[in-house]
Length: 437
Ligand SMILES: O=C(O)C1=C[C@@H](OP(=O)(O)O)[C@@H](O)[C@H](O)C1
Ligand SMILES: C=C(OP(=O)(O)O)C(=O)O
Image (cartoon, rainbow, N blue to C red; front, side, top):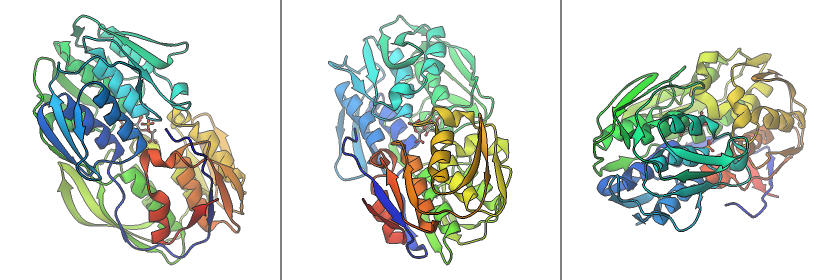
């Protein structure tokens, strides 16, 4: 995927102002390609995220024989082949940097009558896959991994899968979705129970494509033996991308920024709740609906933030927002405590270690714990901070650069294109001081 090395220089810009719309939701874009591909008929996707992660998923379905046209940027026309119409691939399927891509595809491919191999980049190749392999094997799938349950995943043809009643050991929408997608191909009922409700896009989208499914927060039930029918998908703007602007505009004095039509699925907006507890001034305007998902405009104005104990119940609802939250905490008044977030250690990087090290290099006071950190707010100075190729850490450090007393050189930022292509230009247009090194 991203091969060219890219470093950024972030420094004080101007107060963030104006209006902007961030790109389409990554989770929804992955799922829209997958379900359209195995539906019957032609689906139209609007607002598709043109990120490397989601483009990798689209490229994989092309390898599986699905025609996918891109009539214009952020549009995809997917010529679905039906549940049993995918073709055996001639080469490995490269998920790039995307855990979502690999884990959901493992479930979907477990039900096919051909073998396939899922590979990923260096970061994805270190991420745990046993969490999907184990329930899929219990359903009758035949999957091999590298030692330690790591990618690549070799998925063999197995006779019909069996439904399962599965209680997730960790709150993970990816594991839930892998099991549900395998459940489409399974005999009988597949039921998934979660220790804490996670994003329900797979469930909502299966229903939109006409698959009978019952779901409520924390539980989903479906049976095999139905069909998906092509539909139109309108992807809302990604809350996780909007998050960087919510934090930056809260921190930079004088800011007053409007983020348009942000996806507000309650399983995604934990950061909003956490920032409000810290004293942020964020107003929801024009609430509406887009493609069955709640959306709203978010107006964010500078406010003085104070440290909080982040309620553990919020953690799954803001799981991708901790790098940005750490920046807010490092610049807030007082102490912020994060607990119950051990999952952060198995994302694109160990986000507790990498975010803490990056901010410490700028003078932040952070004490790590196995499942979180204690961050005491203060001032930041300039310096060099390494994102270790983690897109969300890179963008979070760019926020830190707006507030630091000197310029911040951020290493290894090319992977921002996996989830938020064009972040740097959009951020500059809003007032960020940010340039290529
Ligand atoms: O289902 C999804 O689209 C995602 C689920 C989360 O991962 P986990 O399921 O591992 O928590 C999240 O971190 C990831 O960015 C996207
Ligand atoms: C964890 C993330 O994504 P994925 O698991 O799909 O790599 C993310 O985008 O922050």
